[in-house]
Length: 284
Image (cartoon, rainbow, N blue to C red; front, side, top):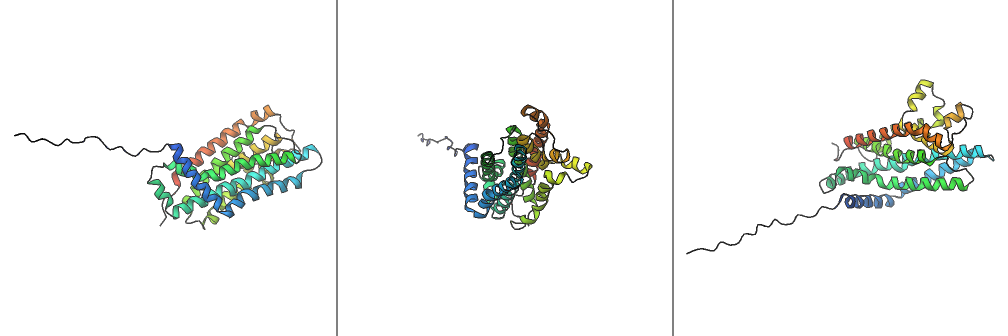
């Protein structure tokens, strides 16, 4: 007598479909943006402070002649980038990543489908979007107030985009050495001091040897690119060389392409260091 053998279902159950990288990143970025908007202090710092300082500096420095308005607009853009990169992006990413780590959110996200680069990049989205949008807004406002338009927008765009990458990477590195969100006020000081020290108004005071070194640091490159893009020369040139003649649009690109390349290298190094040294779990 033959015993019938029950049929065995050899079909492997379907595995859950993993969402695309874009969908995962978009979801993470949306969640980070919601948290950002709910924090009124961060929102005010991101919108009011950079715009206010830029406009105040423009009104202080601008005169009735076109040359003074060009100088004032370039200075206003430099001050805008100073506060936007420092408060809107650097300090925001630093505090958000540190807080998420302390709450165990980063560790939980890392055990899911999201990749490390998606998690870290999402934390940079809110500040980056606001910085880019308000860069356009402040440019329109300055021109609306009578300032001539930029000589060449390419260096300005490069300074903003690459500057965001630099400070995002530095924020992740700093988070790795930050015990908690409160300590971020202390650990952020070296980067903030370097930002201020890189401004053209201070660099003119340095000895030549020191100035040559500072000129090659990322924040000095960011500020100089913004100045070249708007005025055709830098604040240091205008002060130390008795008002150096501004360059035309094509000459600006010739003068700044090496600076943009150097800043791109700085951005890559900072992002690599950020991914390497960021801490995913609470430090003991």
